[in-house]
Length: 356
Image 1 (cartoon, one colour):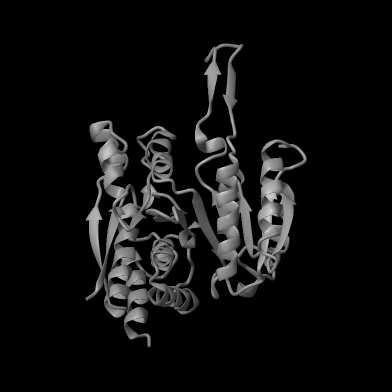
Image 2 (cartoon, rainbow, N blue to C red):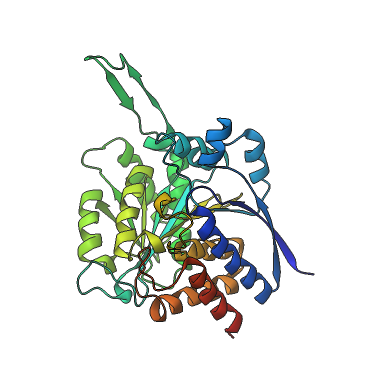
């Protein structure tokens, strides 16, 4: 009897539904090829729903999402909704409510993809950022006094708990052991200025490292790490960091690997339901034009398959993406690919169907 996975799908805003369609096409093909099934449940969550109802995401929807095996998110972001409302009301609320405490961002340069880093090839860019996803500056602690006056005071606090820091660091070490690579972890922080928070991070990091003698553990200030990501990306295997620094360096990583159009991420609860998404956003100006690159959404499906345990299917999807990027796409940028959004999905599907 086939194993069936319950998959929640949030197509979202702008071009989200377009790239989600290609991700689902890939998922269905991989499921048929590797003898499992997916039951899709679609949720009307996003900017249009908010503008119509005033609701971001309900407790009932969160309860429903918590019962699924995985969540596939297209994009959240609407030009008619003030920045911060959807991001905090949907994305952060979902991550916190479902305790998706790991944000996993692979940074991999595929053959045939242009990187702005001179003289760097695919063998030089292949690392992963493990970002703490439910604490830090994004926890929402703080406040504002005398708003709108000359005496206004704004405070935003970074919350770091031993439990939250340790489980993130421990996940990074465990994940490093699964990679056939350098077996090296770099803690990214700012111990010389953020002396309280990153003292906790650094002490915990080296205490956990003692349990993994086969993995090289080292530390880098975030500013120095940004320079080295550009100059020597081959130095990195797994980077672990807090919520804010992780948010910043992963966008730098996306540019190194060729752009947002091929960057995928996962919000992971190892003991619960995880959410997988392309990173590029809703790109509303391209809505309905079939110009947006769906590769990031397809790689989000690859991350989903790998996380739920369908390793062969995940490998096949990534191999299809690698082939298409190497042989079929002229440029990964929207409107410059030489193929429509759906045609690129078809090319990946064709590879999966005909692979051994």
